[in-house]
Every structure is written in C-alpha cells, then in structure tokens.
Length: 124
Image (tube, rainbow, N blue to C red; front, side, top):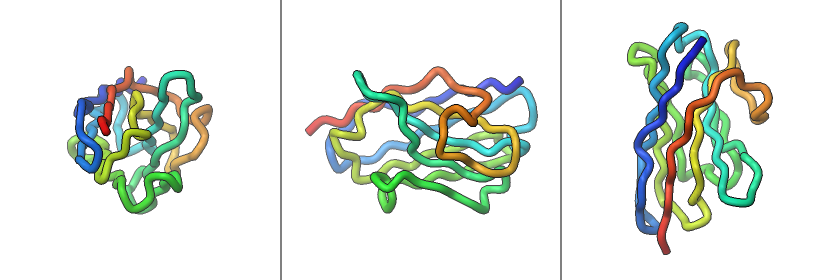
C-alpha cells in the first residue's frame, strides 16, 4: 500500500506560481512512477504530468509544456509539480497518483494509488 498526501494548493493570480508537493508513505516511493492529474468542476479528470521511477523520464500534457515541471526526490519520498505562468483555466483539484513500475502513463486507470487532491484556484 502507498499513501499519498498532496499539499501546496491555494489561490493565486493569473501569471503567478505554485509548487505542489505529494508526500508518499508506505512502500518505497522509488518503486513507482508518479503522475499528476487534475479535475475541474463538470469536467473529466485529465493528465497533467508524469515522471518515471528514477526521475529520468518526464511526460507532460501539451497544455502545460513550458509552464509546469514535475520532479521527484526519492530520498524524501516526495514528488513536486512546479506550476508557473498559471492561467484561470488551470483552476482544478490536482491529484497525485502512483503507478507500480518504472514508467509513467498518460492514463488515469493505469495508476494504482491516489491522493485526496489539493485545490488550485487561479484568478483572472
């Protein structure tokens, strides 16, 4: 079992930045690829970014490329999502997820564990 706890969400103005953290406990975090997804009201959950177990490979949705950066610290069992140049359309609940195995995935159903989510609100 892996427990995931997100933090770092909040209210920010358009153009601002936030850094989300996802702290993992339970089984060794380094055994899992990690991902970030988001869900806005009335919309389906969508892929944001993912990172391989080693941190050597990263994956991004087109709408965040150049603005968001995913990283991980396997010593601290923590994954980060640095979000810059935020837009009102980035407003959503952001979820951290863990996938057994080395490689990340773009598909939510391929992840095994989920956090409770953290709210990000970007005002215009």
